[in-house]
Figure (cartoon, rainbow, N blue to C red):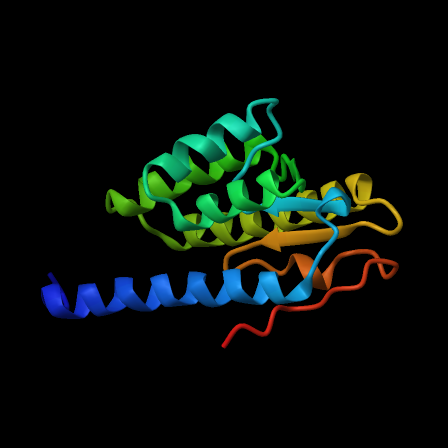
Length: 160
């Protein structure tokens, strides 16, 4: 309501264009997909990772549809996040959106993102082997690439 229907549609169009650009960029890299591991923000290590991605993709999740495309080309999906940290952060966000926001909650959320980043970095380090390529889909607030071990080279996609 804040921006109106027109602004919202424009916003959705921009997001759609972003995912198209990301898809095109990945196509241009010409990866050997049997050597690619995919890491997704919010995807817990649980044994049901593919099912989760399929369910979200079926609900029009453009990001998750791209994951399925990469998997169908031979990439391996890796559970990326500690489910306990995701659950705790979800509860904090739920409290924050219900009006229970205070400095303590804001600090706790920031700390959980840092803890999640540390877990993701460890997970990548443990699962990505020499000669493999990892693709990490991550929200803007994360700083995982800053704490990855130095033997892992990070290249950001240039998609715009």
